[in-house]
Image 1 (cartoon, rainbow, N blue to C red):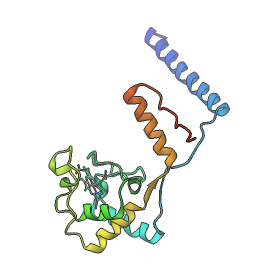
Image 2 (spheres, rainbow, N blue to C red):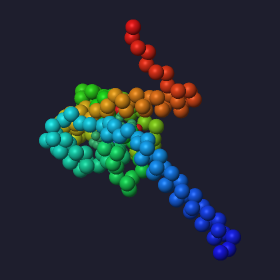
Image 3 (tube, protein in one colour):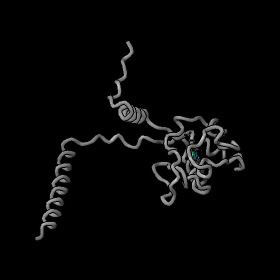
Length: 166
Ligand code: HEC
């Protein structure tokens, strides 16, 4: 073997040893699986009709939902998972009906990548989308984890534990 081959073999050995060690570690200290933190409270009928509409009019060219988006597109639009914990059905309906959505949420992107106006979509479809996205909730434990991670990133300190009410 040449010098370079030894190096590669040694590196591969390290990678394999690392993988085995990780396997043993997780067998003894399994990571608790709390499941997917996002869920919809809408009926199956609403979920099906809204998902079809969402796909047909191309929302997923820009947005992620259930962690999935059109992989051919790269617009960094916000993920819509859990959006119903942030926005109400009325708010969503007004947003989809606005002639200028950027007057409600200013865009950080070039105009052609910003949220398009869906004011000309039939009212029933705007209502269906608002109903569906208002039903997309996020579980509290996940919000707490995100908050704690963000706090640590921005301040470098651990997130203060909630004080018990006396
Ligand atoms: C051209 C890309 C694009 C398309 C297509 C698009 N959006 Fe958006 N959307 C965005 C961007 C970007 C934002 C963030 C605000 C902005 O920059 O205008 C946004 C914002 C939103 C928000 C508000 C999120 C929040 O933080 O409150 C909702 C809800 C939303 N879009 C739903 C939809 C739905 C439903 C469709 C399809 C009917 C859709 N979008 C189609 C790019 C897009």
